[in-house]
Length: 423
Length: 159
Image (tube, rainbow over all chains, first blue to last red; front, side, top):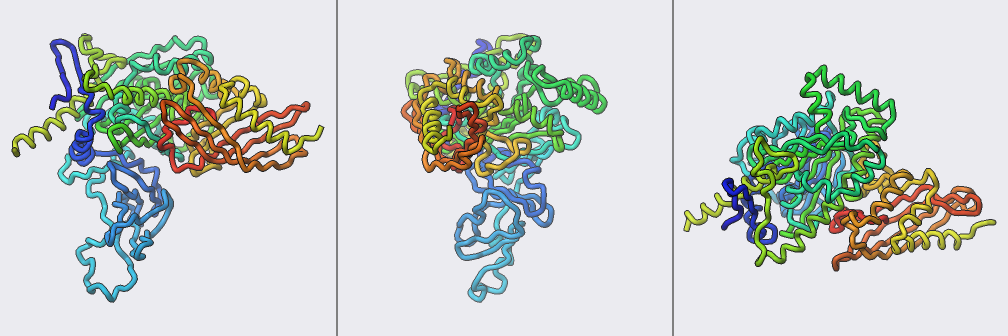
């Protein structure tokens, strides 16, 4: 199966459009990608106290992210070991124990079975081996507060998996000495398009101006001198299919890049934050943290965008032409109200299902999907931009997307090759 | 002149009609100079916009921006314009005598585009003011009665 054509000599990179529409390919992605890669489950500040829990859909599973009384955060499979029913039905809350309503088996918040009616019907050593406890995902690791699960027991460590993408996650996390926190109201939405299209779109600066012209029109009306900062930077291919674009942009960043629509108090505050960053990290790194934006794609389906606000999104396919998206918002813990207001105002101007930009992205992806019904005759997408450029890719090139596709291709080809070897 | 309940209902129906007819500048003009339009997170209608991320938290300037943006050809998600039917039901009016009138209603908004119909349902709470014989919207709050924005995927319209 030919998925990509990666022609360095010709500076041409093609992706076969069947990957967006084919059910057999989706089944293979589930087996080889979602069952084997590290997948983002949430941020540690979502369950800060003992007993805090949140239901999470990750890689097609129903999980329960829970902070146990033993102070360990786990991902439990939200299914009763007895007959399978979903145990916890509330989306979030705080509980010492969970009880399955079907036969009233109950479990401590670390998953241990602690009670069921009619004990006389079971042997005394029932559950001595622990198989009647709610099962936890064995591979659960975190980096700078970002927590991940992996359904493959033999997977490499998260640290190794993230590789040199950690440098960019650090730049986001280092914004605040007290750490980042998630805001309430995780946005649960969808796109009628293949999941890989949002992975591409999230590290695509090339589409910025044409797709989001109306956003930039509004920014221009707020700041006549908007063009003093151009939208420019570099694109980088990272380890294991990850990619990033790092660039300057004309919008305000509530971490030390002031914009004329903010008042003088905020200007002073932004200058102070910048000075603090310079003290902690030196001029060069402080400049990167404060004045550069980064859109990070962690293969296969985590995007961390540190732009006019900080958002993270994950996205899972339920069919080739439909994905479910979770959109998070992050901010420095204990941020003053005026900064938080500026941040959230920035967020909503661009991001989210009610923003002035994200719905247009959504539309672009859906129009791609709609037109893939021409796949039989028109077979290839072009992702070549910047291949012929000397001296490194620009943020408006497509190298960071090629990074994703090269890994995607490597994973799927390995699976095809194994099948051939078995035959 | 004293307002009647019917005056309030007529005002709401006119507001819905302006949205359905894509007369969005006229819609924005219904708001007071400090008017706001908000859609809080699903399941948390009383959330604070500082600790939770809303879908929409527009001040007067931004709701004007929203209206003007949607009328542009480059607001791709709504070009060509979708077709909408906005309905208000179960309308409850309180403090009709005062300058600030609270109106609660249920709503159903059907949006159709590219042969797909999405239906938004929930409640709306309007704070209306009656000054110089004219009704204006001081605040319009849309509380979605959904589990998520699936399959809608977006709130590209003004609800």
